[in-house]
Image (cartoon, rainbow, N blue to C red):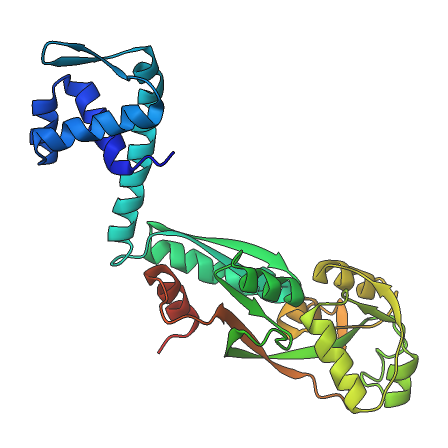
Length: 293
């Protein structure tokens, strides 16, 4: 069975007016075209949907049963058409934005707030996870774009450098490294490290920096959230390596102590999108906030 939207539109108009003539006038069709569409719909339905009395048509019980669903379908189609027409101009609709933990917690809330203020008919929904999860979600189409802290691994995605960032090694104020505020390679190797889970961009950058120095290390405690790591480090359970933007408040208040080291912990935050010849107005508007000219 193949029912067309045009047949449903004709059915709804005939049901409303009870006359083929009125429906043909409203739809700018010939009476024969309307009659043929109704006849074809009834053929597909396997039985009549109208009772005929002279030139008038009245819905029978089957026709009355499907009319609310037909009207609902037509309303949804008109909503889709209106959105597609309007979204070419002013940004509107829902954009799914993904971010790895540090970006999602410390940077994007203000940007999304500004986006909502500028475009009241648009909405940006924020999804937070680790860098690996965000990459996969952008690739699958679950997310419209992603912002990550680590190195991209999926070559099919479009990669745009966004902002510079710096990781810092931090310890609690009672930690043995806190007095000297620096750590040698040997100290780093023997440290009790509190890290994010595998797949985290922050962890990947730290592991790469240690590897470049030939330093091996072990993870004493693995936690899935930046705030949990900060609290564990502050409590003296070990040392951590986190984005400066995530720990600046704790450093300013003396709750955590920054430790100098031979590691290169500079990194560039990344914007990920799918490769496409066309970007929607909504996506372009959000990218313009991220990458102002």
